[in-house]
Length: 127
Image (cartoon, rainbow, N blue to C red; front, top):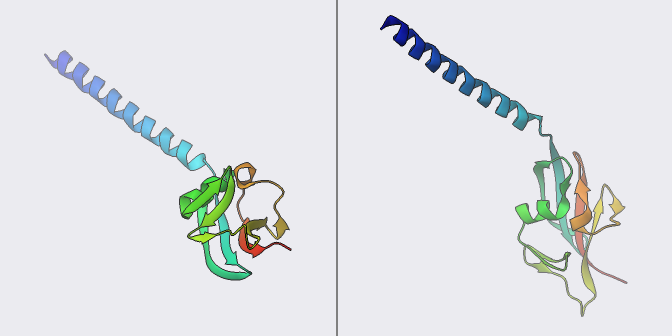
C-alpha cells in the first residue's frame, strides 16, 4: 500500500511540475515576441485632430494598426475615412501619410511599422 501511495504521489508531482514548466515556457515565448511603440497623428488640412501612441507587434502592418485603433473605411486598400473624416473626390481631398517625415511609397496594406515610427495621416487637397 505504501508503494502505491508513493507511486501515485510521485506521478502527481511529475504531472504538476511538467504543467508548471509548460506555463513558464509559454511565458518566455510570449515575452520574446517584440513589441513596438508607434505614434499616430491624424490631421485635416494640416490641423491635428487626434494623436496617440500605440503598442503593436514589431513589423505590424499599418493597415491593421489603423483598423485596431480607429474607425476606418477603405476602397481596395485605399483609406477613404478615418473616424468620420472622409476624403472628398470632388474637392480633390485625399488621405496621404508620412512615416518619420517621409512621404509613403506604398499603401497602408503593404507598409510595416517599427518601434519609434511616427506616422502622420493628413486629409488634404491635392494641387
